[in-house]
Image (cartoon, rainbow, N blue to C red):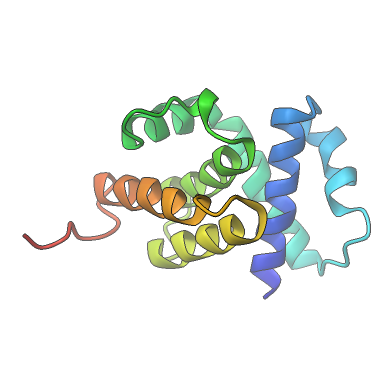
Length: 140
C-alpha cells in the first residue's frame, strides 16, 4: 500500500506539472498536502515524478508509438500522466516487475480516470512492455 500511495502522489505531481504548469518543486507541496507518507514512500514518489518528468520527451515518443491513433497531447490529462509514470517504471526500474507496474497503473486509472481509462492504460502499457521485452508477446 505504501508504494500505491507513493504512485498516487507522483501522479498528482506529474498532473500539476502538466496541467497546472508548475515546476517539480512547486508541484510537490500541492501533491503531498494532507498526505502522511513515510520517508521511503516520499522518496519513491519523488524519484518517480522526477524521473518521468526528466525523461518526458522520450516517454511521450514511446507512448505515441504504442497508442495507435493517439497523440500523447490529445490523451486525457489523467491517462497521459498515468502512462508517463508507468512508462518511466517500465523503462528505468527493472527491479519492479512489469506486471506490478501495469496493474498499479490500471488501478490509478480506475480511481482517477474515466470508465474507459483502465482498458486504454492497460493496452498502451502492455504494448510498451512487449516492445521493451518486459513481457512475452501473446501466443498466436
